[in-house]
Image 1: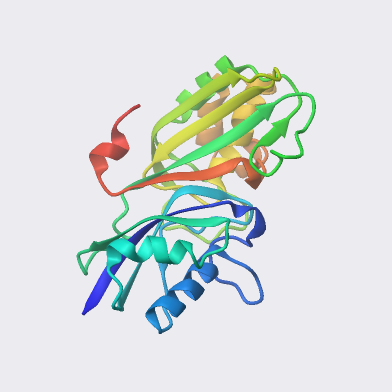
Image 2: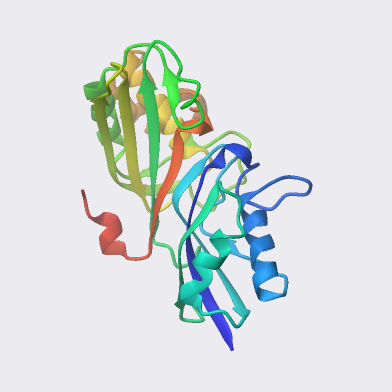
Length: 260
């Protein structure tokens, strides 16, 4: 009997050329499909919700596939994790109605961007944070993030050369900025954004723009003009991939729109 399986996946994106299968490249999708082929005895194509770039991590990526296989779905994650490399883990696998699709049924996503604000880079954390050595004013960053919340045309925050979109209007439901000082005196800053969808490199460009607000290069109130300009050159630089995490995929609109 054909089963439709939805997987929740976490991975360290450091050693991958992104999510999507590419010839002669190591990808997250490719590694998972290889494991499923061994388990199911057939070629399996999985559909991921988000095509994360090289170096980007995931705490809650989702992907689905349909296949006829004998192993109970509730044991699938355990079996797969014994076959997958150490930088990928299936958190959960569950059977869904046959018409459910990991990407098309998603209502929105949460991304987390982590910045380590300190004078010197930690070589053991370099793949998991953006190390930024100039002082950042977290209050200014928080104020600027608030200006991005709402429904706007985010063309200024889409990478140049991106695939043309039917619309560049997106809704940001919340954009939280938190900070704490660790035992070494470094400031760990987390930018947590929830929205109904994101343009290519949108989160990393928004991060770069909030960093400019944090360094005083722009004022938080300038964000409104940057949005209205619909001009990529007006927004900040694209922050590197290492600090970016796909946090969660939402299939329930109420959960997506809920703060906190």
